[in-house]
Image (cartoon, rainbow, N blue to C red; front, side):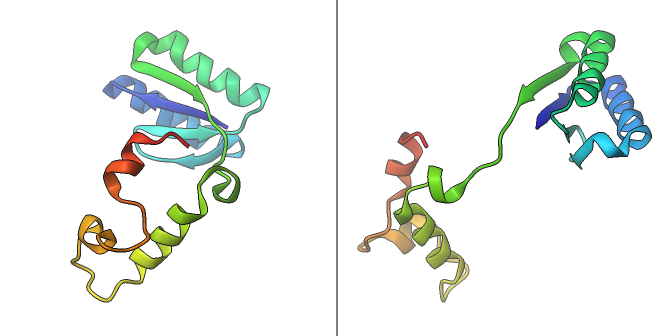
Length: 112
């Protein structure tokens, strides 16, 4: 997929118009950004925006996250346990203290 992020009002307007005119090339719209299909036409739309608006348009190539291949099992289990915790107001650091769940400081420093 191609992530197109805009940084000016004019670029956002152009992105909105392109997305509305070419819905088949759009995976998802996020206000100031959009995910376009990784096709020649998706690249054409993204590059056209950058040619028109220069540095106000950023284009990145993305790939979907395969959580089972890229994320350690302990992190997945911690996310599931935290989502179903008894007290919704408990911060993760307090929730993870004294358990086998990874602490947030360690997770912040580790690359996927």
